[in-house]
Every structure is written in C-alpha cells, then in structure tokens.
Image (cartoon, rainbow, N blue to C red):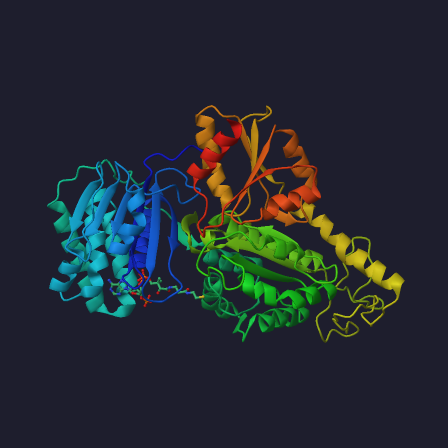
Length: 575
Ligand code: COA
C-alpha cells in the first residue's frame, strides 16, 4: 500500500494573467521533478488572455503524490487580487511571500510568516518589468530550498527561444531575488525535502499524456477544432504526428473534425479527435454514424464546467450523461475515464485497442483538472504496450462488410481492396452494406452492434479495489476520473485514524462492469460516491445498472475535491 507523503510542500502562486504566474509554476515544477522530487500541480486561469486571476499550485514531495493536495503551505502573491482571493486560507503557520511596495498592503493574520519582497520595484530598477516573476521565484528558491541549479537550467531552456538578452535578464532578476530573500530572517518551517537526485522522468500534463498515448497506440490521423481545455492535446499531436508520417487537420468545427475522423477510419487509418463538452454535443450525429457504420474512432472529451459555454477554463466531471446516453436512435459507444496523468497514456492506448477491436466509437473522458495538472511520469517504453489492430478480411470468398459472425465482429477492408469494396452508411443495411429496412434485419443488426460492446468488460483490467484488508469496510468510496487520486489519499489518512474504508476506482464506465460493482458493494456496509457535477451522474448510472444505492456527494464550483473534503465527508457519514 502506498505511504502518505512526507516532506510534502504546497506552494501556490497567484497573480494577474499576463504577469508570468504560469511560467513560475512550470519552472518550479520542472526543477523539482528533474532534481528527483515527486510533483503534482494544479492551475486555474481566466478565460481572458490578459488580466483576471491566475493561480498555479505546485505540490512537491519525496513520496508518491496522487493529487494537488489541500490548501497551500506557502502563498506567493504578485498582486492585491491574489492576496484577496487567498486571504481566508492564510492560516497560522503558513508562509506568505508578497510584492511590497505594491498596490496593496496586506493585513497579515497572526501566526502567518510574512516575507515582503520588492518584486515590481526590483524588476523596474533592472529595466525588465516582465522579470518581476523571476525576482519572486529567486526569493522563493532561497526561502523554501527549491533546487537552484535545476531552476537556472529551466529558466535558460524556456527563454532561449526569446533570445540571449531575455535569458540573461531573467537569470539576473532571479539572482537578485535570491539576494533579497537572503537578507530576510526565515522563521517558517517549510522547506522542500531532499531530492533523490537527477531522474529520467518527463513532466507532462494530462492533455500531453493523451497525445503521447495516442502515438503509442499507432495514431495515423487526427482532426480537431480548438476548444479549452482540450486544445493542448491537438498541439501535442501537431508537434509529433507529422514527423511520423501521420496527418493532422485543424477542422472548421467539431462536426467537420469527427466527420474527417470517420473518413480516415473508413480509409483504414487509426483516427482520433479531441474536444470538450460543447464540441462533443456537436459531434452527436456523427457518433451515431460511427456506431451504425461500425467505424473505429477515439473521441477524447476533456470535460469543463458547463452547460453551454459554461466555465471554459474550470474543472467539472459533468459530461458522463452525454457520453453514455447522448446518442440518437438507440446507439452505443464504449466510455472510459482516466484517473491520473500516467493513466492518460495507458488508457488512451486501451481506447484505441477497444475501438479497433469492436469497430465502434470509444469516448475517453478526461477533465479540466487533469488537463492542466502536470506530474512527473517515468518515460514510457512503447514496446511495453499491447496494441490491437482491426480484424481484416482474408480475401477468401464473397466479402460482406457487415457479415454476422460468432463474436459479432465483421472483418474490414480498405477502400480499393479487390473484391472488398463496400459502402459505409448511416442507413440501416444488410450484411453486404446495402440499405435494408426490414424489421428482421434491423433487429438482427442492432443486436449485432450493441451486443458486441458488452464484451469490452473483458478487455479492460478489473476495477481496482483499494482495501487495507479483506474484512467488511464501514464505508466504500466509489470514485471516477481525477477524483480517484484525491480519494486515494483521503482513504490513507482515514485509515491512519483507524477508519475501515475501502475504495473502488472504475475506468470503464460504459458498459458498466456491474458484477464488479456488486462484488465491491458486498464488501462495504455503506457506499459514498463523490463527483464534481450537480446531479450525481455516475451515482445515477450505478443505481440504474446495479442493485447498489451509493450516497451522492457532489460539488460543482469549478474546482476539484481536496483530500480534506473527502476525509471530512466520510467522517460525517460515519459519525
Ligand atoms: N520574461 C519574458 N517573458 C515572460 C516572462 C519573463 N520573465 N514571464 C512570462 N513570460 C512570457 C511567457 O513565456 C509567455 O509567453 P509565450 O506565450 O510566448 O509562451 C507569456 O509571457 C505569458 O506568461 P505565462 O507565465 O505563460 O502566463 P501568465 O501566468 O502570465 O497567464 C494566461 C497568462 C496563460 C492565463 C493567459 O494568457 C491565457 O492563456 N488564458 C487562457 C485563455 C483561454 O484558454 N481562454 C478560454 C477561451 S474559451
């Protein structure tokens, strides 16, 4: 069983969009990871390009991390808004680094360790106003023992493309920040743990990890329309796919992108698109077409706050109803949901494998928290992944694209294959692919298309049960998506306090592995299902598909759960 993190430090940086908050968070993350610490980050920023509150939280520890943690130990505020937004969390014992003199004068709560740093003033004196963030980072590197050599390396690496003068100016501002902090008396207890030493890791966001997983699975064609928080998947794929001879198109909208994906799949290519809720809604009709014409495709949905344009840059797990049931005319699809950054790599490969095997749309759900969070992951070895390719016609006998077979899977051909020509149509069709509306044919074809999907349960690893021992637990917590990482840590804390609690972490959400749910239900006296949506979407689905009646715990404020929230809720339920 994983241990609770020790030497665990959470630094939150807040400021205005455009002030370089995100860069500082990225630099600290990279530096810690490369020095051998475990990192997990969370960031949130406004929908505007400039202005509004931007926040980046870096959690670094010497032990494995599963989430971004509770609140911060160290707050660094670039402006008055960042101070105001976080004032309530400045609890006794926290450290507070802030810009002073500045447009705000903080009222330092008792017990808070305050470190005023002239960030703006120093940057102005150095004729480099942009470098205010580097002054702040230099100061923090001294105060909290952030690996300094690694920081210098990442500053140089990041700004090289902006020119030598920018690199030099920023390194100078960083060193000045260190000098300023060295003159202060450190009184707080916060310091980063001793790193293990240089590690062969990559720091990835969930979005990049999905792109990497797709490449490992053999992605050949990608088409998408940009939409926050999914765009970064396309940016990653755009960097790497053309180099491997694949094709990437930025389509005019989501209807075009999914249509192109289906065309490419018909042409024999492994194809994928990525989007977020509003885009998935637009893809609805073509997902029906994918199901009807049995074309393999992977659709990544990075969920964000909705409905409609909603909260484009905020976190939510609220597309599950649409993912499972958002099809017209009794259509089916497989739905998977990723848990962690590493899972974004692994489960994307599984998504492709299922799409190819069952010749159907596979929806891979990620969320805003995973999309923007970064974590260190070991560099994956593509040879360690099992990759499935579609069943192809052996060229013998008469070809019937939609032939009824024992396993429900009909062999495919590429266009132009002699004797293998066929039409992929959204109309109901017979085994040869020709329109046929007879009742007997429609019933047989619907059974063929829907029944084969049920077998997907056998292709996905059994749902993980997180249990300290084999006995009956007082409470079982079912979680999906990025909430799993939060629940993992909450259960560890609860067990340390003597609670008997188990966890259950499904990745396959449609078809639901109902028997696995039932078995888990038998091992717990009560069930709780936390999720970040108002209606309790997975709880609803579990109640419909199993005999279980989990209690819903829902939030929808644009932020993920914290371990502390789950701990408190479990204690309340069991009180
Ligand atoms: N010296 C020189 N350049 C610096 C610098 C420094 N000291 N510090 C930061 N920068 C640069 C960064 O390199 C970056 O430049 P790039 O865009 O060329 O990479 C730029 O300044 C912005 O800095 P960064 O730290 O990345 O972001 P930020 O904290 O200032 O916040 C965002 C800006 C990211 C919040 C904002 O630009 C954004 O993208 N908002 C989201 C928009 C969106 O998705 N809307 C949704 C539409 S539906």
